[in-house]
Image 1 (tube, rainbow, N blue to C red):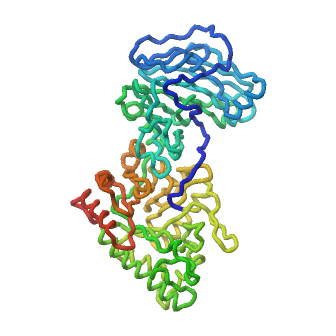
Image 2 (cartoon, one colour):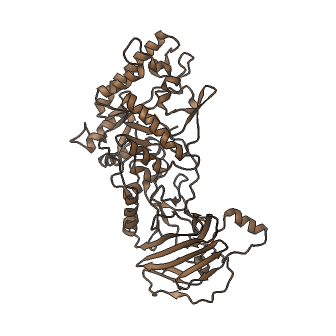
Image 3 (tube, helix red, strand yellow):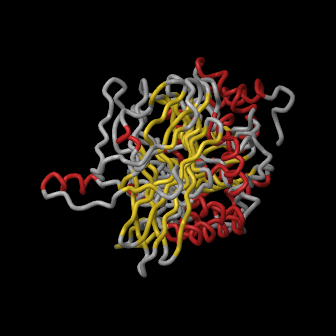
Length: 568
């Protein structure tokens, strides 16, 4: 259902994440797992107080500083070493410590190797201006696939708690605030991991003495914050070597994300190009035909027409229902035309008989779940067909709510099954095809766009957008890459989201959102919403009755586009 507060796990892939917490006053302790003395001379880079400076020893970084500020508490903080899981740390506290692979210097003095029974990991450090580069090679010489392996790169110590974050849009667009959160105070709905499958892999941090961007330069691994910095590799096939290039990019405090990582932004946009071709940015009306507040035996689908006084148990009542439904259509058409809307989305043509599982999001079930919608009353068209026809005849676009979850009928009740990426494309295609063919729908709110663990893979929306380039997809739960294929929903009324997330527009300048604003705007948010409309965001409002709030939507558009209040 819309606006559910969901908690989810992030996918693994090549996850670079943070396992500690920030402590700006107490240095973090990083204990060496190798326990070996340092006998190999460290490679020294030119010593200068300004800019980036570091040295590489036998075990990893011996030192790291930017503008004279040391970022390592000790050489142990810069060690390259296998990363223990939380479970492994507990075991080590209870059991004798098992042997660990030792870090040894490579023939190159700026590289460190870790050897394992199954293969080798090598990290080569380099410098490009104020950029620390790390080229990690994971070689699997065994006959078995390497399922997963985690490696700690370093543990940084900042002069204060950094501010920043990912460019991920996050659940319901909380990331619209951009990379400016204190990294230890992120909301749970904003991931601290930038997985390139979902978002451009950049973490922005203001470190006090300057700015830092932590990047996956080749888009092959995820990046995250709150030390230690760890890279987790997965699925390295037998006899193969996989390479991962990451970097720490330093700059002045006023350096923007584009200044330090413009190449990564460009690379990401090239790999996942923007493909939404929807020129009409006028408002959209939301229509809800049923509601949980209705509870009458004669009206099991909880239709709200006639204040719920609906009787669908006989033909006379069905005829009255049909007349009431078409009156809603006529009234809504008048409201939408007056506001200058492009069209409407009807959330519940299947009704809301089974409250716990709505919205059903499967228009094919209308005849099964709400058979009165098929009542013709000796007319040429059924009630639901005539309903949508009234809007199209007025030149308005129409749409419905769809869901990517399969529905199973259990004891006569619809039950949503868990959504999986491999099935979501087929489910959405079938439901969209039905609504397009039967009612001419082109607007689709996609409800509950999450799996049991995370967001639905953005490739799902790409596949649907490729199949139906003439529709607008409006997913409920967004990820940054969704903006390449859709216009995700963000709620102004619930979360005071006033624009498309900054991070999304850094990658996709033409990205836009559908902002749910049924109550219009508050004075303190007026200018922000006007700006959002000017930049192409679409406002969603209650479209089945005229109200002061609907009037506010009209005025926002008139102020944003005084020369164009009607028409795309």
